[in-house]
Length: 187
Image 1 (cartoon, rainbow, N blue to C red):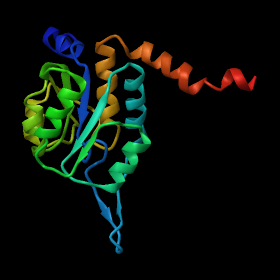
Image 2: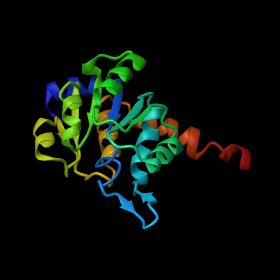
Image 3: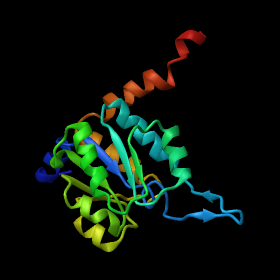
Image 4: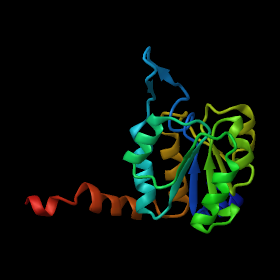
């Protein structure tokens, strides 16, 4: 990464906000004959969110569409701030700025669709999965190599943490507190 302006944007990030459909998923929605909705989420994104948590970098989600599957998945991931069911993402965005006491330039947003543009345009760092709408790709500071539903959020998180020099300390913290936490008691 040789772009000084982009490096400065990354260093200032204190909050990540993500869309859901098209970022955590590939945008597909499966509805069975009895009306049950199903979505497919990548475990890679959950790992990325856990890594961000260990770097003390909070993550919130804003989805224009309500989905019980989204509620279940993000609850499982222990995400404290999830907003769903309104195509106007500005009010929850403003609320998140208040909750986390951050300025616009301290927010990174990842989204893929037209509904994300009004919020993305205001953020300090704009990220888009590679399969995003062309207008979203046009304003993105970074386009992930991964498509939505394939670990695009994890890729973004790792990219930011590398840029902030927090990746390896967070990985070590996660390793010690999660992966090895029971090792000392089982020996």
